[in-house]
Image (cartoon, rainbow, N blue to C red):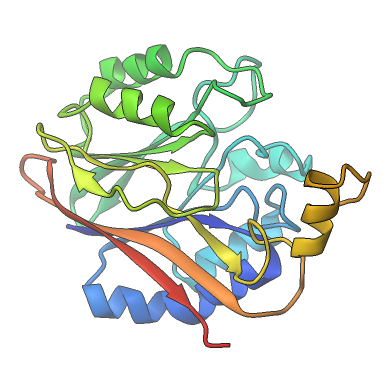
Length: 261
C-alpha cells in the first residue's frame, strides 16, 4: 500500500498548494491513502470545520493535529461529528474526539495515531510512551499503523521510534516545519523521519512572513507573526510503501516541492 503523509499545512498558502498539487502526487506515486497534519491550517493555528472540509474535499483521507489542536474552540464542537480527524492521543485533560482511528482502505485496516511530544512543548500531556503502549494493547485489528509524532525535539522523536521499531509501520515527525533528511527504515521495519516539514509560504520563516518572525525572535519586539494570504508555495511530504501482509514499511522517500520564483 502506498501512503502519502503531508507535513504541517500552514494557512491559506498551505491549503492552496495542497489543493493544487495533491492529485499530481497521488497519480504520480499511485497513492492509496492520504494523511495530512492540519493543526496550522486555519490562520496558522488550529483547524475550523470549513478548512477541515476543504482539505477532505481536496482528497485528504485523514487529518492529524498537534499542540495547536484547541487554538480554535470550534474544534471541540465538531470533532465528534466528523470521521477523519485525529487529535493528540496523550492529552492530560479530557477532550472530545479520538487520538487513534482505524480506517478501512480497500479492505486493509490502517490505524492512524497522533502523539504529542513532551520536550519543549507547553501543553500538558501524559507520557507519549505510555500512551502508545495503551493504543497497542487495545489494537487487534490494524495491519498498518501510522504514527504522527508531533514534537519539538528530534532526539525525543528518535528515541520514541527506536522504542517502537517493529511494532508500528511508521513514526513520522511533525511540528518544526523544517523537513529533515533522515527518512529511513529502522532495522525491524518501521519507517522514520524526524520531521516531514510543512506546506505553506516558501519565502518566510516556518510559513509566516519572515520580518514579523525576525522582529520577535531576534529583536525581542512584541510583534505578532504575520501569515501571508498569497505567495510562493512549498509542499513537503513523504511517501510510504507498506507491505499489506506484514505491516512493515518497504520504502520511504521525501517530497520537497517549491513553486518557481
